[in-house]
Image (cartoon, rainbow, N blue to C red; front, side, top):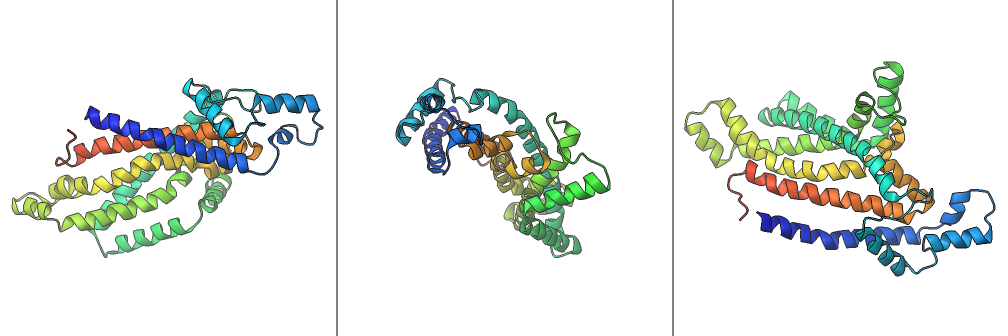
Length: 308
């Protein structure tokens, strides 16, 4: 198993290099003057501009800038933001908020999606199944920011059950509404994926064999149908954590969450290549780690899978 883990970790090297190269290239080609964005409408003295361009390597060609960034990143230095704060400090401050938000969204979507998909699959063609398919299709079709504003209006303004915005001091209660909005689309996909897997496994050979042995319907559904149906769902959930954290930009913007998404959005607007690439690097590492964890979980869900 350790050989497999080491091989997967080695595979992350070209992924990280490629992702940082692409993102750094996009920031480099973005229109606008990052130095001018720092000062707004104020005039910039020539000496100050020259010093800042030298400090942030803005006069160097793209490839030189990227190589310098990689060299510093290997020592744990992800650069300095235009505000003067280290990028690693900004990421360390914003990442826990987004991570908490993504975990809450993941728990909500997994619990409700698997439960609804499991029951819908067992009652295929019934009223509940048809209703869930219609609801999931509606959730997938409607943009996430529409649900965000509706949730704010209904549960924040009209009913007063939850804060409208999170602000600078996130609490568990204030993150519930953003977590529901963030996990809505994934909930719909998990529901459909679970339902399809349940329907397929209900007619599988191992399920018919379990029934022929005299096992009760509940035992067969839990131990043989649901367990095997969770394999594709586990794959989706593992990669979805990284998707939720990367896709939190819209949700964090609507609810004013001081997380990694808002940090990346502000960095893109200011042309801070070091901050953007630092955020992307962290996201890539999270993706790779979750993918590795999912692969190892396969052995628990399916006894046929073993890593030598």
